[in-house]
Length: 169
Image 1 (cartoon, one colour):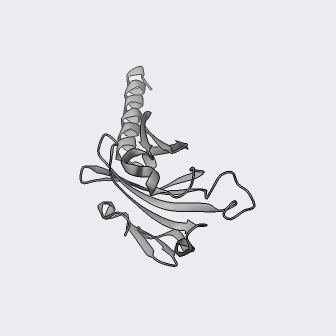
Image 2 (cartoon, helix red, strand yellow; image 1 turned 90 degrees about the vertical axis):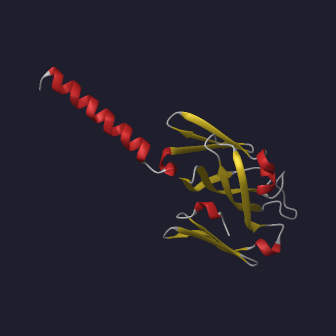
Image 3 (cartoon, one colour; image 1 turned 30 degrees about the vertical axis):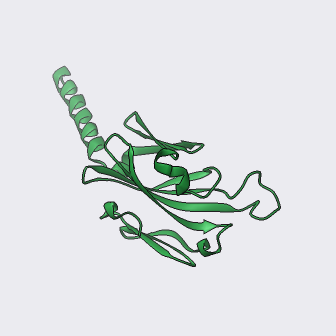
């Protein structure tokens, strides 16, 4: 293979890799980390922080801190970014043998962000709680096709990937 052919081949492969990275769904492009009440997303080396304190985000989850954060869905649509997070943390600290001392709180958090990753709207669904009887989980969040559903004693919530602007209802 000639030097020119090798250079063209490398350029072609680089172009294919770039095209794949920008056409992949948002959820496949994001890496997630969290510390305290801040969730950090990285996309192609660029960082985006979503602070739980934005738009009263602390009110969006019942735990005293975040121990696990799972990105259930991420989609760009209608000029916005929609995220669905599944968060869990302790009911109280320090953990002890008293009421809810070993318990956890779990929420599904729907976020609508603008293109600069600023929170525009947020909704939360408490689906498992040591403190709230009605939030006893019956069915944990589970995907069936393009719809996620979770059930408690009091409520059933659904989220549809095809219509992320509807949030969780």
